[in-house]
Amino acid sequence: MNTSNIFGFEETEKMGLRKGIVFYFNDWIDEKIISILEEIVEQFLSLTQAQFTKKRSGENDAYVNRRNIRGGWKKVFHRAFDNFDDSNILILDNCTPQQLQTIYTCIKVTNYRGSSHFVYSYLYFQFPLDIEWSTVYQFMEYVNSKLTIRYASAGYEMAFHARILYKSYARN
Image 1 (tube, rainbow, N blue to C red):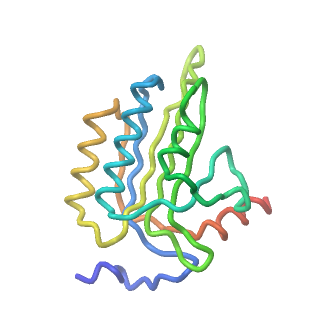
Image 2: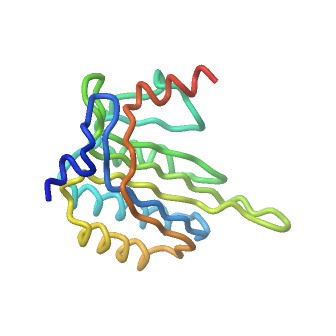
């Protein structure tokens, strides 16, 4: 099967298909969990053989708040999550103005606990289509062994170019 054109879908610079995974977990976010999250992202990069080139942090920032990564993704990761106290979001990808990302990671962690509920933290990953499903499932098992996963799902995902996606958010 030609996985680069599955379902007859033609990728453009604006959108494409990826294999995606989302994990919701309820571990208390502390230094140990931050270290585990870093290991998980390292494993993801090892599997994809790609590197992050762009970063974005904060809630629903417009595309203009995306920045090039300087000094490596680990520096960006530690700046976002060292001295963690409540909640934060970090998005990493390798999108360029002319090309759709082949990898994408969103890390949203929180320690919010209300009197009757709390908010789950989540991890979201997009893999290139040429990564085998067996590799994706092994990655899911790896993450499940590291965190207290409450929900996980994998499937084909639409990848949207960040410039288009975040400009549409900015208009709303």
